[in-house]
Image 1 (spheres, helix red, strand yellow):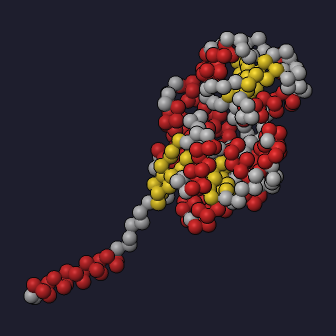
Image 2 (image 1 turned 45 degrees about the vertical axis):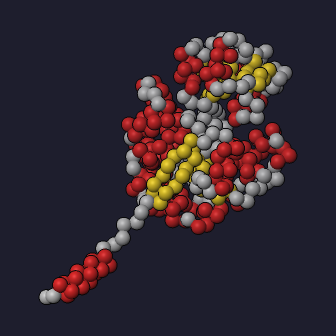
Length: 334
């Protein structure tokens, strides 16, 4: 065989081999903005740390973005493809009838805050004549008002509301100085406050205070153009929830990743608090209409009534991606 014939044979063989060998699909790159470093955001980290995104052919970068003025423009401009969290802002967008947003999943059902108070306060009735610190028009103010009204206490008559600024630790210092007698806080901050002598008066999960949850939100355009990618994404998320529920060590790793601390008390308490939320949804993160509508009617209609143009969340929810994940994973919708 001549050298030219040999060369031709090699080219033909290489072409045939390429046709016979299936192409390996490159992972789809997704930028996912998460909106808080509280431990409620464990599941996407489970999917990242345990290789579930990679398993479903996704290359996901989790990017911390705090404040609606940061993460909503990033979503709407396409700089991030999925918004993880921001329930108050997302429900606000739906209340304003923003046509661009679609919620494809929700991890939680109920407000995860805890009302921490000074040791002398043992019951709701002990709040009479006391002061509670709140952030203006924040979830903590909404939760505080809910608790007072549930216990027939009139805000700013029976109980004074003191509007505060600063982070949790700064506000805890203000409470210790006697500027107010209690405040609603996200987990796991209650553990540090307990060490300082404060006590838990109410856990809003137990009160079944509906919330927009921790939604997964995309733009309509991205949803319409990328159904396979979003099915893969919600499959990884749904699988991560199942793994968290079955394997405590997996849950611990995600909490350490978020909080950067491995205090056994923090790990155990926050793991169990998250587990309650995931058990409440049966492990299946379908978007939750009632939670968003509760935020519209209870939160936005109270604090910013002029922006409320829509109260029906259904046109802004798409449960099909979670349903496909359920079918793929062989899970039954509960």
